[in-house]
Length: 127
Image 1 (cartoon, rainbow, N blue to C red):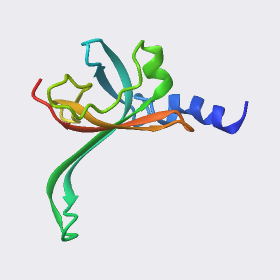
Image 2 (cartoon, rainbow, N blue to C red):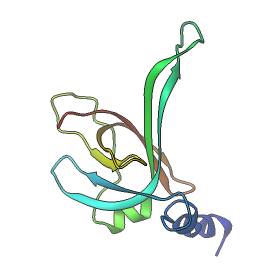
Image 3 (cartoon, rainbow, N blue to C red):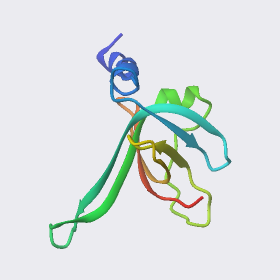
């Protein structure tokens, strides 16, 4: 087994361990309504940088990182962002550390084909 294959297998611990690691449960739902419960890592940050001024401003930047092989094993395709607002998007649902539930649409899917992950860039969704 080469190092890339070993690194992908290690994602079971480094990305998905919800007992002693940073893994966090998430529900991923495709545009047809098929969903799967997965584990990955998220960030939900309340500050961003204004690109015109370089000054920090209030905003929301959210993303969730998932293991590609786990998505496929759950019977889903690897998500993609759907920019058309009339089409039903991929939807990601997870709780905050305080058990507040959030639902987001996938704006973009940044796939790392070497490591075997996909970072889902998230935006507001009112289902």
